[in-house]
Image (tube, rainbow, N blue to C red):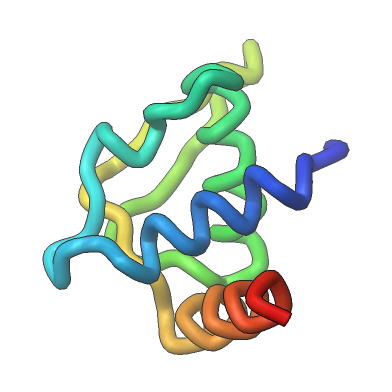
Length: 88
């Protein structure tokens, strides 16, 4: 799966600055479409960056989300690292 690094950074940043209870369906809001954002969330889940909520994929490749979604400690670390890189 080829993931847009800018979208990955955007999703991580949104989760980093989200309410402490995490993000619900609004995490999918993006002009690229919900399916693309869900695929990024699945990648972040595979890398151990999100917790509480989870992303599943059925045989047809459709995504289902269990919300809300929050960052793990390693997800927070990655989001902060990417955020500091864009500021430089």
